[in-house]
Image 1 (cartoon, rainbow, N blue to C red):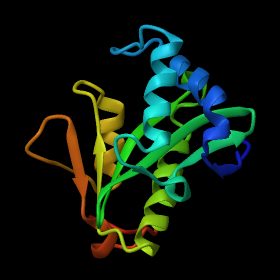
Image 2 (image 1 turned 90 degrees about the vertical axis):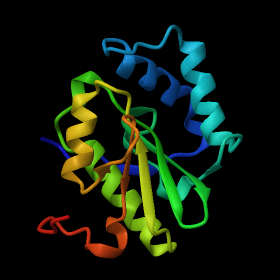
Image 3 (image 1 turned 45 degrees about the horizontal axis):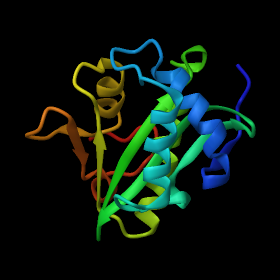
Length: 162
């Protein structure tokens, strides 16, 4: 399997990311109603209207304009970052792309002094739930929020355990 390049995600990739996100959600339990909704969600994240968008910790796999997976990270408060969106085109799933994007993002966040990372997961999305658990996240009180305090407690090496 060829290795895909990783790039930081900026607003210039918004049109490509919109199509990718729409395609990624198309056959899921929570399909997006239209491409305009996908564009609005991504624009809201990347513009910083909800929380500060962290381009340095947000990554996409593939060579622009052929992106196939993306992980977008925001920062709600000092020391706490959130994986706001994580999606992979159906043809590129189960290849470790999201795992790599999250690990690289967490490495960038740790270097910036972020101590906690949370990730939103829609109820019933077992694939994302398994991925986050595998990466050391733990389920919080809420069904849809998972948080990890693993940035200080473990290295991001492949042999690290939560």
